[in-house]
Amino acid sequence: MPNRHWLKLTNIVLALTLLCAIPTLSANESASINFTEIQKQAIFANAAYQPEGKIRTLVESGNYTLTLYHTIPDIQISFFLATNELTKTQVISVRGTSNIENAMIDISLKLMVDKNAGVRLHEGFSFAAKQVYAELKPLLKPDYKINVTGHSLGGAIALILAMYLDAYQFNIEQVITFGQPKVTNISGANKIQHINVIRVVTPSDLVPLVPLFDPLDISNLDVYWHAGKEVILLADTQYAILEGTDSMLRATRFTQKPLTEDNLKNHQMPLYLEMIKVKTKSSKLVPYQTDLNLFNLFGSD
Image (cartoon, rainbow, N blue to C red):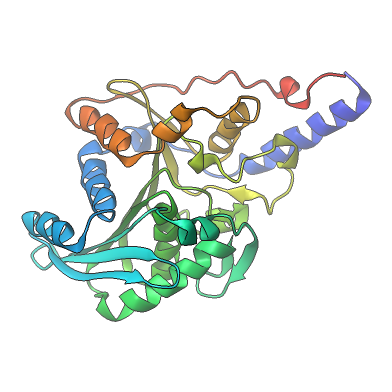
């Protein structure tokens, strides 16, 4: 291997050593995935795509009241807030990408300092989250548990909302997102380790991997980075869990393969609901299989 390739590999190994300082999952934490709760939040995330009447019917069937349903006109972001007075719980659900305005938010890739969160965030997602938070804040109850969810773009905004809620000391019970793209960098991900974040993905869903991760940039501490546990929905009852560097390196196998219709199908919420439903009855944690080889990341001369 040429010397320059050895140098790149050395930099990667050093960076990986640094990043391995990020806490990993214990066996007990890995075994604590509750697919019944994940299914509940998936239903809320999927509901955000529905008209207000259907959302109201859904939340009321679960003893919630639809406190707010709103679409922000200029960016066409829809979301709702549901409140359960018996359990003192509120749920925020944000709709995913559905039109050109949403797509423009998706492609605003700059990492900018966000004063509310105190970290660098994806500029487009942060812009949308600020507007959603402004609408929600007067209706949030500080003494209630708050759950936040969303799919795709909605998941990204949901996570940033959780950062805002945490900064203002609201009681965040959990954040569960589906097919969520990255929103922050390594520093931002580390700052919210104390928040219970679960990112549910399917193996061939490309969206959770964007912006795509170049292993040669791993020594760049301002590179986009995921927060929380990544729960990968595998076939039948099986699932895997990745976190930190392991989760980020999963993206590398997509950089050498052409995109297909399967990538689009794997991002759709109906598939998520289908794969989660099977695992509410029986689930089996298995190691995630990868063909990643650091020596193959550089190509050949």
